[in-house]
Amino acid sequence: QSEGSNGKEGDDESSEAGADGGVITTFEEIDGKPMYNEMMESLLKLKPVSLELTDDSDQHAGHAGSKGWEESGESHFSLQMV
Image (spheres, rainbow, N blue to C red):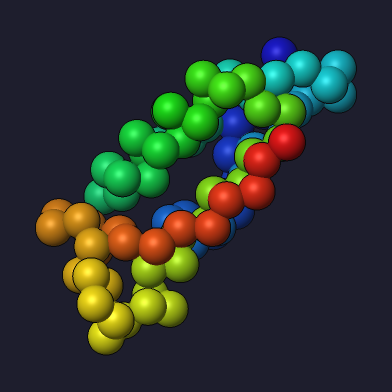
């Protein structure tokens, strides 16, 4: 069994395996962040034991392509996964 995600909503979300060291199987969806939610869903298929997906879109304002996903403005992410 595993824990869901924690952290600041929309900025930094991480999930880590439960005490038994199992794979992560769930995460908490964030309203208004469809790209984040789809990425997390896809990444869980790789059966990670540690997963941190950070939305860095606000750090790229003004760059080409920085408008990101039309509905949410998501454009840049950082990923750490084991």
